[in-house]
Length: 208
Image 1 (cartoon, one colour):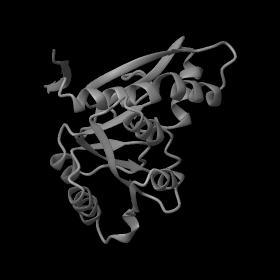
Image 2 (tube, helix red, strand yellow):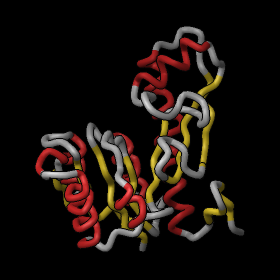
Image 3 (tube, helix red, strand yellow):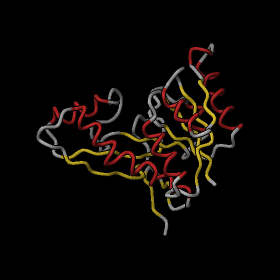
């Protein structure tokens, strides 16, 4: 059983999709065992509570330096024997110590087809605003491993979403979540739980 620790900062819609997939049998070999929020009172923590999953707030401002903050999160995840760390809308930078501890065991979802509209400054609604401003005809979502480069880790899965003529940033954001994010995030976890992928250099290779 793949034990998942989810890191969140907001509402937790992707967290909900992951939890549902593990509970309805579509991702049978994985389980969310703890949720860490970077802020108090996030709805993501309420979602965890509703599913009887441990939830805790660990804030950067509660620590005298960044390394102590990273170590506190590592200590918490280790106490739950977490195998895979999932960034489900986590808006805090991950430090080197954390990246080393969970190398090739941290995944994130980004609301575009990387390498388009990604990197520093591209997050949330800003990604969709940029896509519409550029006039691209397709966008989507990307699940990738996390490394020291923002949105630069090996790509696991991508899914295309077609942009409609009357789309706003808000409508596009919702459709990307519904049509792509909530589908490929659980799918990536399933592949990892089944040992069907490996990281070779900066690429992900599927195993038979």
